Image (cartoon, rainbow, N blue to C red; front, side, top):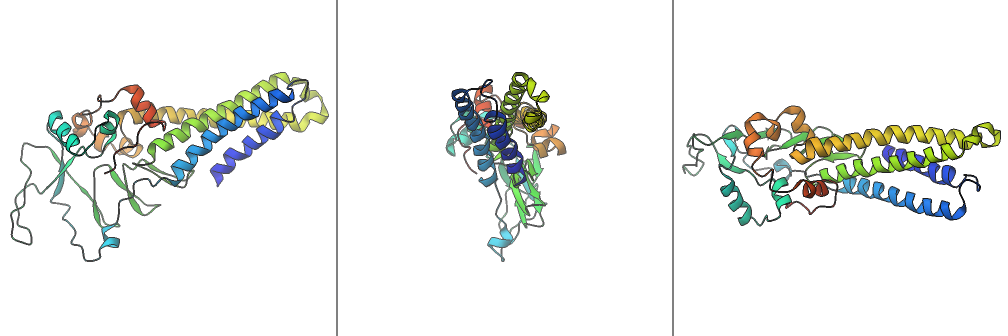
Length: 304
């Protein structure tokens, strides 16, 4: 609600005060109508992505404790994931699982395989379980004591939501949900289009500030003048911050396929042990394809 108020409030003032209360000598009615349509399109793109990021399930991992109270939990000490040793092995796995698009390959979470234990052991049926060969790199899976399950790589527990999220980026109070595997690109698109909407608002107010400079001398236009300047300063600050953050998300994180959580913790793609693994499919999709995917126009990622 706070985010909607921060968007709709200044937008309404811009629309009904800055545009429609402008003097006829400065802006005639047809120009006001054209400017209103353009401004509403900008607002629509902003609200569309706000809706998508807020109501798209971010990638919640089901809790084994809730699904089956009698389940026997795997031992996190003996459960590992390993990287594919070659690009050919990964490509064949992707082909078998029906992942064909290069962008899907780039962002897909199926770029790992599970293996149990670093040494042979007997299960409940007295069968020898497979083990990881010493020459293969492996990392231990994390175990969530709250949700009582093993988490796939790149998953973290959100204390605010009380669930584990795939490719957890962060919990965003401004949109009221976690940012994760399924709504990360919508979040970046929301930052981008909201920043652009702020830039449009700033441009309109700056133009009116220049054209209506006489309003500051007219006492009857004081409300219009102060409202216009307040929105100008507000939109410049908010729009600049959001576009800067969106650029960081796209250029520094998104195109490298690294979440904010991973970048801060230096884990998974951010960890030096996984640099080679992270680069395995990095160049499979072009920069333009990745950019259009990130800002919300790309194809959906094949779900895990």
